[in-house]
Image 1 (spheres, protein in one colour):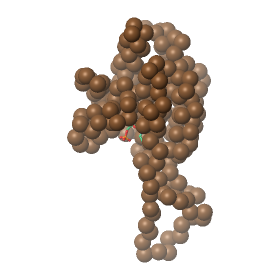
Image 2 (tube, helix red, strand yellow):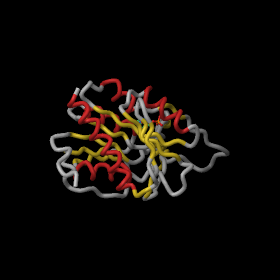
Image 3 (cartoon, helix red, strand yellow):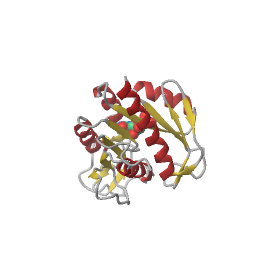
Image 4 (cartoon, helix red, strand yellow):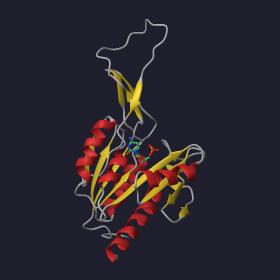
Length: 223
Ligand code: C5P
């Protein structure tokens, strides 16, 4: 089913968390497992697309037919994404990229003998915003928004600010979804509408998202 509907399309997907080093043995990170991004990569592949998966540190494998690029920090993911995006028809940015990183990485392991420790953080590069800036009329850019509150308003503002074609919203308020879960419950927000979906396994959520992407490809071909 759906086999070959994405044949000839080159799609880039970012997935997983990023780790921002504090010292040689510690990092700032988050709970992202990579499951959602990997599920979309496999779904695109099943439908015949050529897939590049840029993954932060995760504990999962992907099919050999997917070109996987492993990265650790936001900076590494940024460089890989900007390079790979140039000859892609679409990119889906599902990675939970760190928004802040330590301003410097301590050369040696920070010792315990201190009353307190302040680590100063600075903003990381926004990969989505940069790809939104360089994207051509032929390219499709999809983002994710994981929110804890004011979900739809925040997601809509990201859609516009980062010049995305649509954004997938998931909320930490829905139990048994998002980080590390096998299930997810999403809303797809486009410029003109909001589509809501049931809670389901990330594999089927991936199919819903890729259906939307396929629809956009068809619309672009028509115009
Ligand atoms: O602003 P926020 O991080 O919530 O935006 C989420 C979207 O932006 C996701 O698609 C995420 O992958 C992407 N993003 C990114 N680079 C960052 C931060 C977020 O690509 N540094």
